[in-house]
Image (cartoon, rainbow, N blue to C red):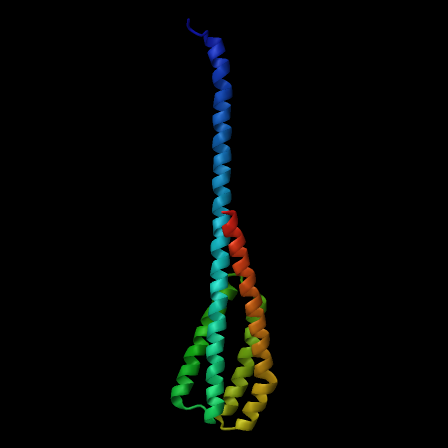
Length: 167
């Protein structure tokens, strides 16, 4: 026995509504997952940039110590310092341009300026002034920058891990 058209029509409407609702829920779920993935990617990117800042700054610090130990800056060391500073600048610029951590950018600026004064004294052969700048300005600026980078790096890594856990 065939089902009357009116009854069949009444049954098909709720099924169509259910299909539309199911598609909407699926689309919303996919959009949410994509948003979480974007946050995850950005957090890991920030954490990696901050790790790069940390590594380059440690390299620059090692060159500073070498210059003090050698009593000045020769041409080879100057080239290495310039190259390392350019690497740090590039990464810090990426952090700044990505809307990243402004406290890292500010702390690096303080450290960079203190290092410039110390390197200037070293280039002039004024070791005592360089040591005084190193102890009084560079070391505190390095510690502050290191602390900020470490804190922000861990924060971004944790955000990435928590976003990854949700996914």
